[in-house]
Structure formats: C-alpha cells, structure tokens
Length: 497
Image (tube, rainbow, N blue to C red; front, side, top):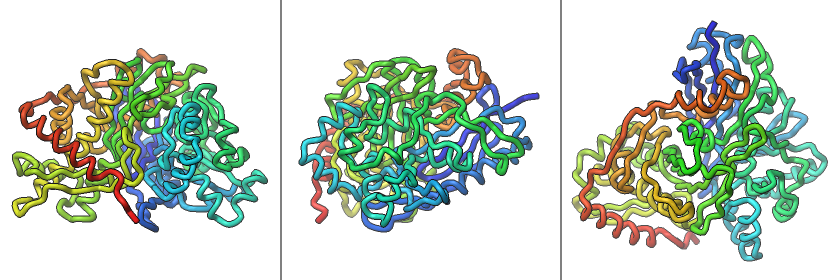
C-alpha cells in the first residue's frame, strides 16, 4: 500500500501541513493564518500556543483530507521560520513569554551597545553572521532580562529555549526531546559554524545560561516519534530544517553554486557553497544549509526583510487590494511606476546594509499617482532589494549567477517574477511547487527513513513550471536602478527618535 510523508511547514504568516507521495506530488494540504501581534512600535510577536495548536490542527486536517491514517505516514519533516525565539517552562510546557518574531527590532539599542564594545568581528568570525537583532541571541537576552524569575529558573535548568522547530518537537513528543538541528542553530548567533557547537564565549557575551540550550542534531535523522494523541499511531519525526535551508534543498539546489530566492514574508536568497564556509566581504552571512550523515553543507545568504509582509500592508493597512494575489493585476493597470519608488524597509534594512534604523519610504508621489503605481512600486522595491543581495553574492563567490530558482508564497504572482527577471537581467525559474520549503523538509525526512534511496532519486522530483526572461528596455532599467539608489539613501539612517 502507498505510503506518504507529512511535512509541517511553520511559517511567519501561517502554519501549514502538506502530504506528499513518492513522486513528490501533493496529496493534501491544510493552512491556517497566524495572528501577528504588535504590542509596541517595532515589536512583532506570536502566541506560541497558537503556533502549536494551529500546526497540530492543520496536520490532522491534512491527514483527514487525504483519507488516510497515521499508519500510512512513513515520516514527518519540519520546516520552520528561523530566528523566532521561544522560552518555556520545562515542567509545565508553558511559554514564559510570547514568541519574539525574527522581524522584531526591540533589541536594536542593545545590539548597538555590543557593537560599541567591539564584539561584532568576533561574532562574525565564529557564527558567519552580522551582529544584528534579526537573530535569536538578543531576543533570548531580552526575555531573560525582562520576564521576572526567568533568569533564576534558567540557571536551575528549568527553562528551555528553542526556535520554532524545537518548540514543535517538544510539543509533538510531549517533552520527550529538546533538540534543534545545525541549520536552525546557525541562526541563533550562539553557534560556532566551524565546529558545529554552542559557543561558550558567545553565550557569556549575551549572558545566556547554557542550561537552556537544546541539543544539536543533524538535519536528517530520526529524533523521536510523535505521541499517539494526534494520530492513530506513532510516526517518526526524521528531519528538521530552517525554512530557507529546506527551500534550498527542495529547489534542487544541492550542488555548489546553485542559487534560489524564496519570496515569503521577506525575500531570502541563498547560495549552496558546499562544504566551504565563505566569509562574506559584502555584508552577507554564512549559515549551515544542512547536515547529512555527519557532513555539513553551508550557504551564503542575504535577507530582505519585507516582501509578502509589505503586500499584506497594502491589503490590511491601505485597503487597496483584497488579497495578496490582486497586486499583480493592479500593477498591470499602469505601464510603469509613474516615478514612484517604495523602499520596503518596514523593519529595517537587511543585507547588504544591516541598518536597524532604516524606515520604509514612498518617494515620487504626484497628483497623477494612483493605486496601480503604488502596487507596481512595491513589486519593484522587493525586486530591487533582491538585486542588491544578488550582486553582493556574486562578488563574494566570485561567480556570475546565470539563473535564479524561485519559490515561496508570493512566487505565484507572475508580475513579480517578470519584474524580478527584468531587474536582474537573468532568467527566473519557477518550480511547479510554490512551497518548496515544505517539500525540502519532506524530502529530507523521507531520505532519513529510506523512503527515497538517495539524493539522485530526490533530484527527479524537481520540476519546472515557468521560466521568466528579461523584457525591459535597457534605458528604462538604468533609470530605475539610478533612482533606486537615491531612494535607498533616503530610507537609511532614519532618526526614529
């Protein structure tokens, strides 16, 4: 009888579950949006219990839709939003505070203080990361410092820290395991990517007790079995991957030099650098892509903090679209941006600027500006930010990138991909599956239990849906890039006081 792989894809905007067959085809899926909490300016939180309940609910619903039971699920893989930080009580399993989301900027003053103390270079040498509030370390520090009693209980070994993967594993196994994998650990700013261990010196700098840290595992092994309260039988949980690593794997970027861009809440461009750590000279970051059978592969990455999140702003904040998919049609109502430029730095600028004080800006408004110009300027802004990251990546890797694989929730917006191809002047290859992070986690889970035999068998799963090639006139492109450079400078170093 046919068996399947269940992928749990916990993302910034939603919790999702997808069931795949041996050909990598989607048998069923379920999705539930997450409430985004904004308690203060620049703060973004999630309710950890909502994350758990929603992920459990969509998993059960996906199994029900497929009309199967747990006995037909060979393994479970987990793909998760990275850097988002949860601390919980080991005895009760209850979080001590809301999850602080990766986009949250509340610790930027603390990060600036550390920069003033001269630790930025040490952090980069050990972790491959830029000293920034994006990563987990300063979020952990904030919870320990600001939630009464947590520090004392942490030292006593009564508190657990985890990124979302650790939290879900804890809940799915009823507290039997407290682990993470190398790809998620490498995003905490507490993990030495060279020896693949928690770094004692960094833990001391951030004043974080090692007692709260999860055990580090590979991305591809059986960690535990799910308890039977959710499914009729216990199922091996056999892969954990940060969502961008999972996407890189699911996009068939398994060879050195392969590059992808995931268009999700933000844009995440990653290059597979094989077993070599490339220390960026252009403000990108190095991370673990995955670890399989004791061998660790690395990635060179740059993040754009605003993509789908900016489209949600058009929907929820301005009300000029009713769904994210309408933005492409609205952008098509105009021939060009009408001189409007939008820098999507609502939560600061990521790579290659790493400017925590940058603000989102709209420039070039006139009496002729309409909603179509705004929509087009958003799509161009996301694409231009991705261009900046890709150019830095080419310099660091000393190669010319000739094609870009794309996926993610808003990669279904064809107008966005055409604009991105125009801006980059290279082909964009869209997978036939938009959710390749879920696919990557499923592929890794299946590999670990022998559902798929090897990497070569996994490669056959990847299929191309569409290819977008450049169509823009060169003069028009040069003008867009010229004005974009001016727009970026307006957004940077904004005085928010």
